[in-house]
Length: 239
Image (cartoon, rainbow, N blue to C red):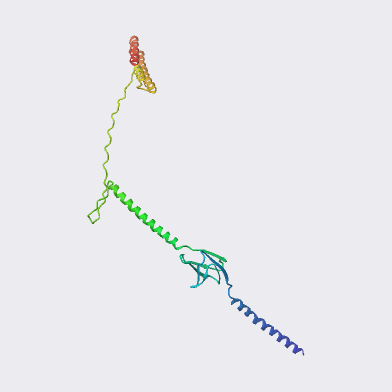
């Protein structure tokens, strides 16, 4: 009896172990094979009614909702506009708005670049012609009959003759007080020039008087000669 009970318990334990081992790999397999979730994205364009191309097939027109899985490339096409490629990822915004570029705008920009290049080339040609005219004295260069290269010769215009210096007017000299007084009355000198001449005359007179005084003190002149010398010096500078 006891032996039968022990055998029954062991059999029940083995059945439970087999049941648990079979359930674990089944759950793992279900998790690994579960498909990724789809992402719903609203695609719009400015202007609208642009054709949506997915994997080479046209699937609709904007605005439209699209279910995508993982990274997905789509193309928006509309007549008169540049084709626009778009990448949708799991991190993309749920609402995508794409502004289409008109083909006219692209063509206008290209035409503007071509016109700018043409204007720049024309400006360079004009500058070259202007430089050539300047070197040839303002005249168009004569056509050359020589097919070989010629050295460019610069024409130098002769410099105008320098004007002859004007003869310097000899400035009158004033050596006496009478002369400078007359000159200032006649307007030939200014007050500043009068004072300048006056100081110079007084300086010269003082030098000569001082020389005469030293000669008298050294006994080279008598008293009468000294007085006569002083009187002549004063008359000389008074005028």
